[in-house]
Length: 270
Length: 258
Image (cartoon, rainbow over all chains, first blue to last red; front, side):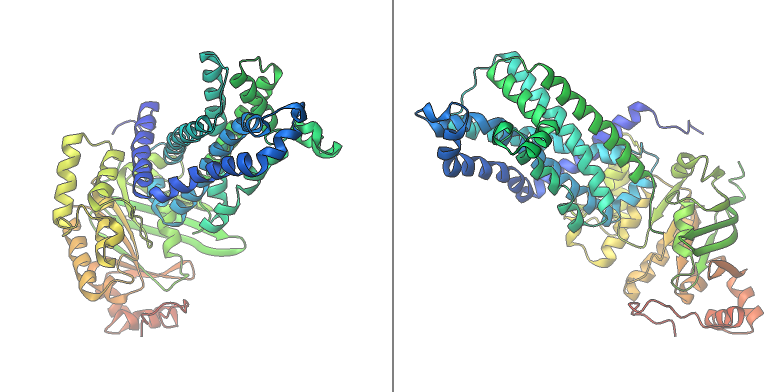
């Protein structure tokens, strides 16, 4: 009889097998990807063309500028990139819940594979989708006139920040998808995750908010993440924001990986 | 390991959900290479038994060994030996039949050449060769059930759990599935199946266990049970040995058991 534990190599192989399954789903169900990427694109167009003229003038020093819309595009592009990542993660909650309700997850649970492999397969597929979504959104922002003065290192930092955040929020959404018990509940569970960036420095500077709200905005994870992205894309030093952002992402990843693994390992109904 | 004589050995397992006991000290022994049918109405504890033995839920108390491995302490040993086809379809409807089987072959770590051959063999055996490259979502109920069972067989499990394998199937699909079960037993596989259909247990099983309210109330060959109850059918047996008819408490159940 062969060894009764599952090696890391086998775990990686199983995760890759299940990643292929999830990528096939994305290719065969393209409307899902279109919806996911469409959401941040609509936000970008809405915020630039509808709100941009007014919002840009309200930015610090904005009343003096001749191009409030262009300034606002510059201000919110990092926020829209974050919304793209969140939008992909959100859909992962739905896909995980769909798997759970269809009985195929029970099949995976009775196989001698690494317990986390089916979940890792979902997260890796989401990361592939995230990269695609970020490229599309960035291309549209560039077409609208967004320009960055970032060096190669700045772009690398921004990409790293977005992927690290994607990893964290996707594991959160995997756990939410497993915990929610139905596809309908899973589509609503990550709603706070979509609203939270609005209560950060993503769309307006926090000092324009009432004191209490500003305090929340300054102390929630999306603000240091957005500020780190802004700094990277402007070629400046993000300073302590980067450490807060990385810390939040690592914390959320570790907690949610453990939460999701525990939910996946146990089964409720008999 | 006593795989040559005992495939499944259960001693005193219990399980409760909240304060609702589902299994009350169940004992069960299934010799290798035989079919054991757990027969009982909905709520008797059949599915819970299968879920405990296939490492999906843990028992409250008691011991269970499958293929020589303890389900509690060596779940991956159990998982390497078993195949499970549950009550609800566990196929991926967005993938084709071939891709579903290939997924299982890859997860069983078959070599690429071996995997392709195994997939083709199962597609042919289960009458799915023509539909192999169609998405499983387009399959009929009977085809989905056959694909589900084929996926279970990819890794050549020595012990197979079939939880109500023919519920909802038309008579012809049911007979096809019975034939597959007989062929598996000829190959030396051990099968534990649960069923609400008395006829199914009668036709397939070497041993029938009557499960009622989380307890095994009678056990024996179909002929022995009939002799004990003095009746001709397993319906009579159920009535004689449990004091009530084998009716189902599920109001959605369309097929009555007389």
